Each structure stands twice: as C-alpha cells, then as structure tokens.
Length: 455
Image (cartoon, rainbow, N blue to C red; front, side, top):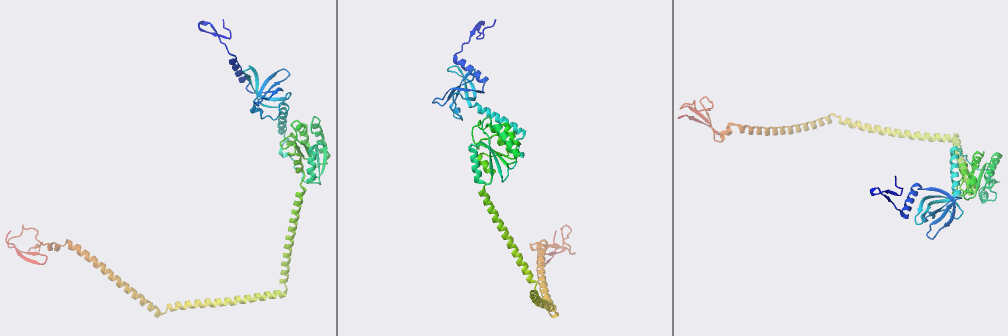
C-alpha cells in the first residue's frame, strides 16, 4: 500500500507530510511557467490601460473568451511608437510569469505593436519575397527613362498634394512637357483594381513616353494599395517605363521594387522625369561657346594655310627664283672660299710638321743626339762599375773577416804556436819526436828554430 502524494516514508515506515508556504508554492509555479513558456507572441484587445507615475504600463489583454493581466516596464514602454488605448488591437511579445504578492498569473511584455500593422508588414514581406523570387525585381529588366519625355501620364489622386507637387516641379523645370493626370483612388479597397485598370489603359494607348505612379505619405494601411500583387504585376507588364514615388523617403512599397525607377518623393520623381530648363540653357550656351571656339580655330587654321599657299605661290615667280638662286650662289662662293682657306691652313700645318720631322732626322742632329746618348751611357756605366766595385769590396771584406775568424793565424795571435818537423809537417804528438830533433815553431809575427833537449 502506497502513501498519498503529499506523504513520504519516514522512520519506521511511517508517512511524513510536506507542508508548503504560499510564497514557496508561488516560486515553484513561477519557475514552472517560465521554464515551459519562456517567450510567447500573443494578440488581443487592450483594456484597463493604466500608466502610473512610475512610468510602467499596466493593462489587460483579452479576446472573446479570456483575459490576462499584463505589465510593461518603463524601459520597454518608452520605446513604443504609438499610444496604447482601451479597445486597441495589439500584438505583444511577452514572458509568462506569476505576480507573487497576489498569486496571479500575468505577462511581462517586452514589445508591443498594433496588430493590424504587424499583419500587414508580414504580408508585405511575404509578397516581396514571392515577387523577388519570380524575378519581378531583377535589375536587368529595368528600362531607362527617356531624357526628353514629350508626354507623361501621372496615375494618382486628382485632389491630393502629390499631383500639385508634381505639376509645380514639372512646370518650373520643363514647361514643354505635356502632363496628363490619370485620376484613380489611392486608398481603400477600390484603389488596387482602379490602379490596375488605369495602368493597362495607359500602357495600351501608346500616348505616353513614361508613366508616374505616385501618392503622398501615410501609414502602412494608407499605402497598402501600392503593395497589392495585381498592381505590382500591372506595373511589371506595362509597355512603357514606370516610375514609382509612393509616400515619403523612408516609405517603400512593392510597386517601388517592380517599377523601372523608384523616387523617394513625388517631387523627386518630377525632377527625375524632366530636365532642368535652366541647366539645359547653360549647357546649350556652353555648346554654343564651344562651337564658336571650334569655328574660330578652324578659320584661323585655314587663314594660316592660305597665307602659306600664298607664300609658296610668290616663291614660284621668276624674280623670286632668281633672287633665291643668286643668294644660293653667294652662299656657295663663301663656302668655297672658306674651304680653300681651310685647306691652305691644313697644308701649312702639315708642312710645318714634316719640316720639323726632317730637321729631327738631319745627320748632324742625329750625331749630336747619339753623342749625347753615348755620354749618358758612359756616365751610367761608370756609375755602375763604381757601384759594383764598392759592392764586391764590401763582400770581400766580409769574406776575409769570416776566413780570418776560422784561420790558424788568428789562433797564433792569441799566443799559440805551430810546430813543424824537418820535413815541414805539423807535429800533432810528442811520441815520435827524438831528443835533439830540430823543429820550427811558427808564431804570429815570425818563425823560431828549435831543438828538442829532452822528452
């Protein structure tokens, strides 16, 4: 047998009851809610909207079957782009939580927007992606606008501010253009079929060089006619280029992406469609000045060529040819005289050089030169002989000193003597010398006759 869910087995197998406090239970419930539903999108109607001095926003979100309390803190509510009011239909992104002091389930809202605008925005993104995938936005299919359009069809409301801006800009910039207003409703359910019909009629008429599809600014709902799929396909099928200028600069519509050119405002579209007459006048004046300058340069060139031809013609006259030939003859005479003088000078210099060479080869000059050279050779030989004798004398003295250093005579000078026998042989031992044997002793300064008296 099991214990109930609020009991556990205690000591001895007895069940023990767990008791929770309201705060603990609220924390457990809040944790379960936050884990199961961390972030949700919810759509409903506002009621009981209140903004106390704290700046927080409190309201109830309801539908036909239920309601839930909501809180949006000041840091989030300050960024709202609209003023929440009772009865407004909104789309919220919120975290599910529990208000513990009262134990009430509530939503903490992080983002809120009008439900209709959010749905329209999602439909806008869906249709944009679809048409882009089909190639309606491809840049290669965009057609250039005519530079000087003769007739422009403006598809817009006949009473709106957009047509007044367009007509004002076009009449100021290019009064020659013919502008036809093709009136259509630009807001509401009847606007898309009317715009499609007018686009088809204008395209088939062949009257217009370009079409302008435009209207002034407004909310997303106000501009929704230009986000219609049929309107986009009619713009794509137009036989003439279409310019789209819907709303303000920050507004984008499907027709802007499909059109051959998108302008940020109706006035900007008018400036793109027609040229500025003042700028064209300045350009024409610049072209005129360039044309005049080109003609002046050509005229000056032709005048110079005419003068040249006239000079050539005058140069072909007999008097001019005789004068030119006379001048050439004088120049040739001067050149001939100069050549003669140059030749005489050159011959004179060459003759002087040959005379100098001949004098250098004369016998007396050559004998004198050879005698001088012989005297120089003799002097050099004498110096060489003296130098060689001096060098050999020094070498002989050096050898003599070396021989004297090893000569017996040098030994004799130190007090020694050499003994010779009767035969003149040097005595090297006293063993074989008999008594009364005559000997000769050689000293450094002379010889002595000796006789052995005893051994």
